[in-house]
Length: 397
Image (cartoon, rainbow, N blue to C red; front, side, top):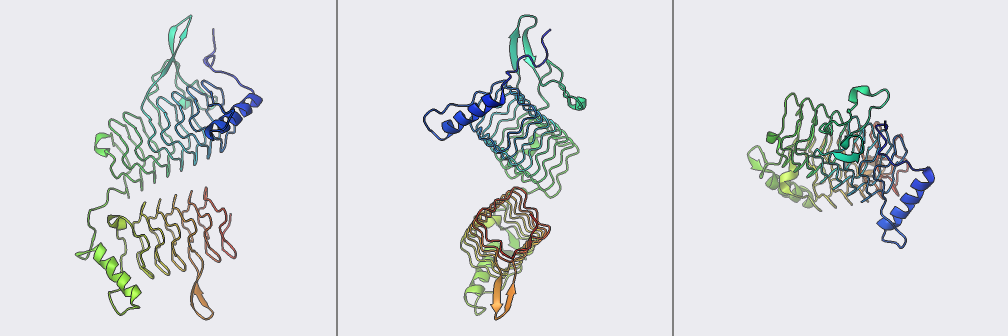
């Protein structure tokens, strides 16, 4: 009798290297390139960290336990793939076809799954003995509690998966089973969740703006601190936030002669759409929400932005010298060429930018100027630091 994995296609390491090399040329549009054909390939427990597999065909591939951290799987065909216990931290999977894939126990922390399709599905193959046989991942030694028996419907597509901080914007999760899944901090903006089962899942701090949660099963779900769609107009003491920000900018421009200094603790700035090139030096806004905002070139020297939500904020070229960002969440924030150095207050006196305990997972600090900045106990896992000036900075990498 054939073994449960008899449908798999074994390949040598040399063959895989040749496939990946040809695919890299394919992805770059170079002569001699060829799209990777890894249909039903047996790559269990392989190290494929950072691999370029965009648009590759991995239908039915066995990738359980594989290391795919940081891999590019954009628009890849992973229909019916076995990704149980795979390390997909920081992987790129936008618009990937994950229908019927098994992701039990996989780690998708920080992965980009925007626009991917995670509906159920199954693969059947014709055999002499059984006619058509539905393929399903076989049991793994030491992991029998998550085994899926041969012929079973692959409905448990994301049971117990870790999607902490994952980007799932616009993802199709119609009918998906997310029982007990960890989605803390995940971006589910615009996700389609009709009929999805989220029983016992944790969505602490998740972004659910535009997601149809009412159509999903939410029994026992932890929805604490979820970020919903912003109000059209945000008020502070009956005054529109826009007016308060305008007054603070006038105060900064006139050196105190006009306008009024603001105090905006916990304010939701998303109603303003953007803060691009605004002059808001010294702004006290601890605990404020800036999620996903365009803040390119904003001047926030000496501002108090401690414990703020700056996830996915575009802070390219922003002036944050001397700003207090203690404990703030800057996951996936774009800080390219940002100014994070000390703010001079006079001869011999300066204030350092404080990023102690800040969460900078997958943030881009390429080219940032951060001399003497404080990063003690900051989480910089997956952050890009290429070309960043960190001379004299307090950090442990």
